[in-house]
Amino acid sequence: MFSRILVANRGEIALRVIRACREMDLEAVAVYSEADRGARYLEMADDAICIGPPAPAQSYLNIARLISAAEVADVDAIHPGYGFLAENPHFAEVCRSCNIEFIGPSVEAMRRVGDKVEAKRLAKKAKIYTIPGSSEALESEDEAIRIAHEIGYPVLVKAAAGGGGRGMRVARNDISLVQAVRQGRSEAEAAFKDGRVYLEKYIEGARHVEVQVLADHAGGCVHLWERDCTLQRRHQKLVEESPSPAISPKTREKLCDAAVRMALEAKYTNAGTVEFLVDAKETFYLLEVNARIQVEHPVTEMVTGLDLVQAQIRVAAGEPLGLRQRDVVQRGHAIECRINAEDCLNDFRSSPGKLEEFRLPGGPGVRVDTHCYEGWTISPHYDSMIAKLIVHRPTRKAAIATMKRALTEFTIEGVKSTVPIHIEIMSNPDFNSGRVDTGWVERIW
Image 1 (cartoon, rainbow, N blue to C red):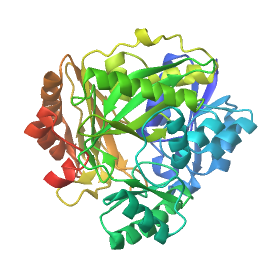
Image 2 (spheres, helix red, strand yellow):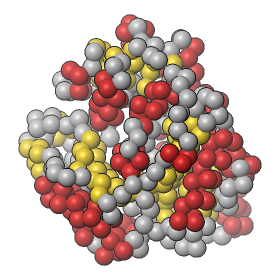
Image 3 (spheres, rainbow, N blue to C red):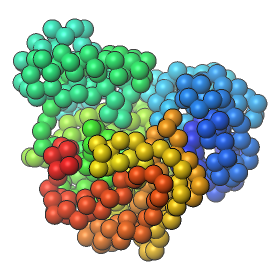
């Protein structure tokens, strides 16, 4: 087991990893930019090192500074969290070349699943349906138009590297497709330093369902059941829940089995998420594989009782999972709402600023993951997430009721937040009956 871990991230996920280290009796070293100086979670770490100015490129995305901090702090492992460099195989390679373990999959596995074109090849070998589209990254706009005519509009332009909805554009005709390819390439290059894009058939009316997997270095691999992430805006998730309210037990079993096959085919280790689109007939298609811990991992933790971050650390240290599939039981229903500093009445415009008043909800079945506190300033330099509000109750109906109650208790003053739209979602009959799809939020709001 490791003795000292550097947390190469910020905010809520940095706090989450520090807490996991404390419970495992491991030392945690935090890093911070000048914008995050004074964050309270830094006091919980055994050491904290400033790595540069607020701009991510000069701090949380600066590999040289992160490695220097790790060497100065004399750590034996680095946890990347999510976002920033979490899915960057070069960063993982540099860590290991410096004899510092990267808490995540191997470099080879990360490259295999991180490239969406390669991931589709693996899926076909694992006998998993893939969405019709280009088999390679697009070489030209003319090629995009030719493929679109073959598979039929609407189509989806997607970045070959990265995730989080960046580089994704829906096109319904030739003119919008040319624009989508250009914009997608530009956004992907800016976000991932990789401007390659590819094309898929856009499946309208689909649900987004993903499966959490855990795999060790001895070939052990289990799924931790599914999360339904259908409620999205511009491909950014708003609400996640488990189990999915819209798939049958038979489909659930097939979906989870497919995720394990995909992980084994990719020779994947550590925690990962295999994402699928599920159509109205419950046929499912591989969407992508995320080689990291996910923002919505608490949903899985609540229904399984497992600590995913601690599991990541143990697997990276070479320990076996110690789990059989029959040991992983799905209990009750969990829902997570992402509370962002955004003005949902003004096209979700970012709303950075100082939290003048910040009171958290509580009570039975309520969990809040946040690094924020009254007086903290939400920086314009980073993701706008303020908190993750998670509830866990015996049934979905009870979970929705608890979430509505908790949302009304959540007091945030000084910045705009997405609390109001989450209250509306929880009260909406479509959501309550499970009749939503990935385009539902944009149609309603």
